[in-house]
Image (cartoon, rainbow, N blue to C red):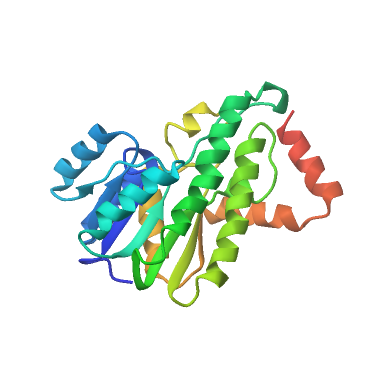
Length: 245
């Protein structure tokens, strides 16, 4: 896939991986639609890039997504739509607050569903629907259980969408490992093979340029977690139990 002159919508562009990906795709010639809940960082990014339609949106709100969809369509269909939006609130099960839990599910899982529902008619024929899972969704990990569960559900959803939306929409899954962002700053453990957002963005763009369904990285970490899922529970749960202390 060539990115030059492709119109690409990124939700979560105000910070972290989403912002780094916007910079990477702009450098490769894409025309961007930039979205997040906060407008000021989007306007600053658009000014810095010298381009970009700023369309504020709350992915957890179907009405907000419908308004954004209608605004975007005024200038025509998209070639690609991407959501990086997610919430992360690590902690033990008995420490999870109910309101925070509801909001996390609304953003991570339901927001992904509402976003996917907006794709038909918004994307050109053969356009890409790009959804972020996480390597945390490969296996239930201690202290990140609700985030892991939400991302496991997202991965399952994207697998279904890949079949349901074919061949008119090319559904892609992105599964990052640890990337230095305001979310991972919450972790109180050493993160293996952690990447800078710019490097993560480069790998994502390269993956989208290929024909692969899933782009996962860094592979030194992701293949270990994929293997963990295939091991007997007697072994895999013993290993994750050691992580949980």
